[in-house]
Length: 222
Image (cartoon, rainbow, N blue to C red; front, side, top):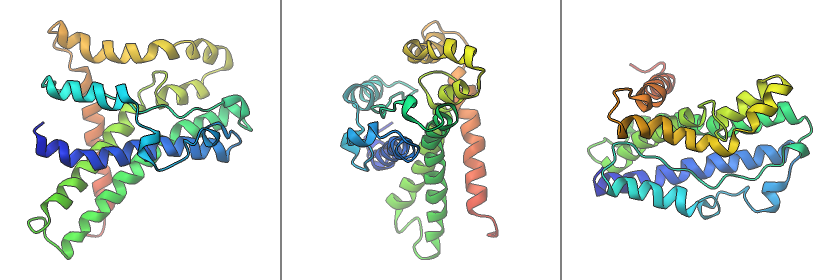
């Protein structure tokens, strides 16, 4: 990624992360838990959601190192699931709120491509490149977060759907889940194994979802 590409990514990435995390807090507050609201995390201020290590140091270090894969995370929104009115059902809704918000943002970005009826991509290259990057960033973020590993949103969705006894066992993996993600994606590359897990688990489904988003945004247009 060159510097011009990084500049194009900054605004879509900040919006994607900020609204993803704010959505978790908003839905949790709506369903009975005001922990995030008390900690001022139900906000569109990106500074409240940036994690110095996960949002800045890790992605920045990977870019400087010329890594083919970027990885990072925002500061998780605090949620006390016991405060939710229906803890198992509502925890599923809280978890889905983030990825769902990213898909909505991707769809809105795709709809804004219709601005080419008023201004051409050649006249406003920054705008259209940012919109395409926004679609990709939001789709990838949604797909990545739906991996069924704690503490990712997909892991919380799986936990809410599991029988109670299995859910308790699965919940104990929360502290090790992020290390499992690192192992899945980095160890094969370090050992020069031809597994391409990031490609099959993220890139392939993200391409499918991105195509669906673009198709939905352009239905009725030839």
